[in-house]
Image 1 (cartoon, helix red, strand yellow):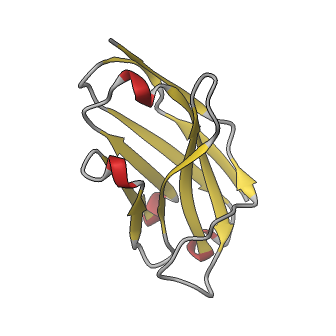
Image 2 (tube, one colour):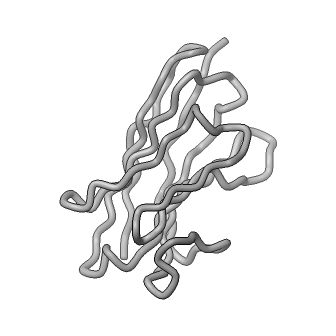
Length: 123
């Protein structure tokens, strides 16, 4: 499976962005899809994921700001990010893991990573 992320860019504080991740592969329905990010000088951290059956999970601090969704017809996962702050500045990576055996949960690790899309939030 291959992942292609897009939608990053420069936005002002309190603005919004929607990231997209297109998943290429014949078994899209079997994959849990997630997002990680890595800010400048920071460790990589998990952001959000959506399970095979559409259950969603987010980092606690982001609940209410970030929303992940699946467009199964387009094999695409979106991450809607609202009320952005400079602390959200990072390269965002979409990830995938075959997880059909556990359709309502998300894995801790992922085998497949996209190339990343850069998000910069100005103050």
